[in-house]
Length: 153
Image (cartoon, rainbow, N blue to C red; front, side, top):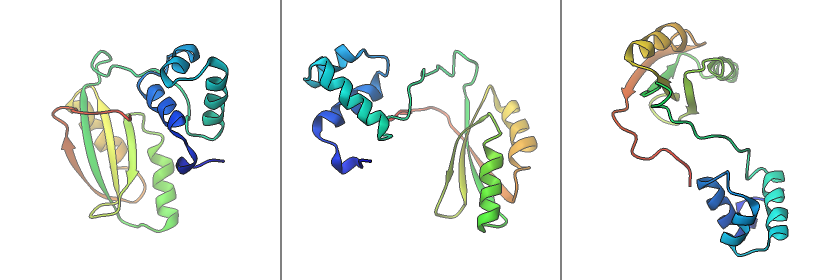
């Protein structure tokens, strides 16, 4: 299995193009990165096999879906031993409104990105789901006013 230092400029260009447009055809991709179709397909399959590309999915429009409210929640744990962290990690996966969950080195233990239709729905998720997660001692909410950049590229 390769790591990022094993990638050449063509591999990096393939990843960059796909990061912006995962629906591009192999023929179009090959043309952009300066390869013929077959070598481009071979590289694409290798990048998938080596887990540089973890899948393809639709990028949804949260506003059109009525999910415009975004809050970032700092979570402090009452216990940070391995069993407590595993219990939290497992339980947080079951909350559909949690879009992202990151373990943090700093003044708190986890940072959650939660997306809901509005502040009332967010309060319900916080009270009924997040606060009830295993070993949660306290939370602090930061409401997003605007997303300036929200993609990998």
